[in-house]
Image (tube, rainbow, N blue to C red; front, side, top):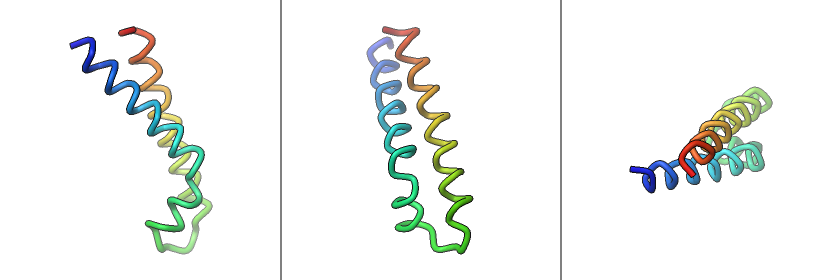
Length: 62
């Protein structure tokens, strides 16, 4: 169970970093609506949440 939670935490952590770093290119590629600034902000917020959840999992189950 610990190994599974460590893997999930690492995946969430990596996904959060990718979402924060590449938010604008991802929104340009996958979303076609007009206000890309709001979509970029939403992607960065989602990436931050993933980052915190993944880091918490790694902290408590390492």
